[in-house]
Length: 342
Image (cartoon, rainbow, N blue to C red; front, side, top):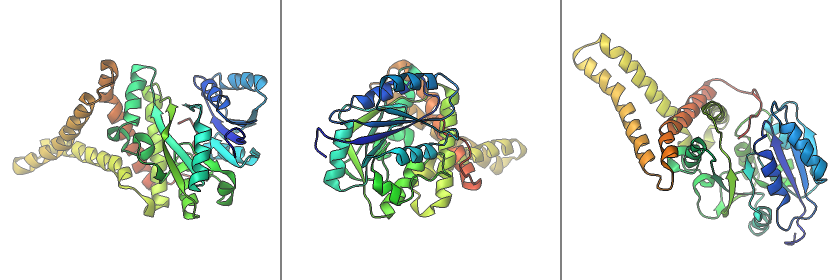
């Protein structure tokens, strides 16, 4: 596995990614030190120009193989890619990401030196519009997404999970591949099984992968609601692996719900009861508004237009995720709802 002789397979689930898939593929084909890469574009039933772009890319680059995934699920896409791959190292790449040129070489070295079965770097969200820049700030901040190591950084070493993932193929196949009953959180769940099987998941802080966030309110809310719903499903399935940070958004939503109920009760009561109801209604909302306000004034390098959008972006992501998580805790999901992008 020398620097100039890396033999690697890349698996890219793709669905409705006309704006980003070309840059993703170009970043794969520009990897330093990779010899004859296998690039599997596993495409779902897109409704935009994604298929046309993929066909254009495949016609020009013989390294690309297109695999059809009519069921759309990302776990299914990854398993199809792993089944087709022939190389010892398989690199997962989402079609919203752009790999730095030395990504594969650095991650392969991390696998070799650490003995890990999976390695990942830091997701560095970057936006092109003011809305996207606000979303990107939330991704990169402890205030926005709760401080996962691949969002905010940390020391090199073993980790709970990894962003994307550079895998030893045999280790993934030995634990049964990706769980096809999951439409989200499938990477986290796989990493738990890899760790339970004795493998290490390694964080490589010096590598940052550019990620393009959702660009509209609707698509962002849909993404976070789905992510929260599937996290709730995982919390039900694996209660011993629940981190405190996953509990904060659903508890916050419960607090908001209590505030709404108290506000509705207040006009119907009087005296101490009314004061108590108004206090319960006001305190959570006031505290959260102050917290969001503090977040908005803190980003030093964010332009004013994007900073103002944080007033909506932070509550939108956290409430959507929290509501979804609560529903996932009480409503079992088994592979419903295809993958719609990260």
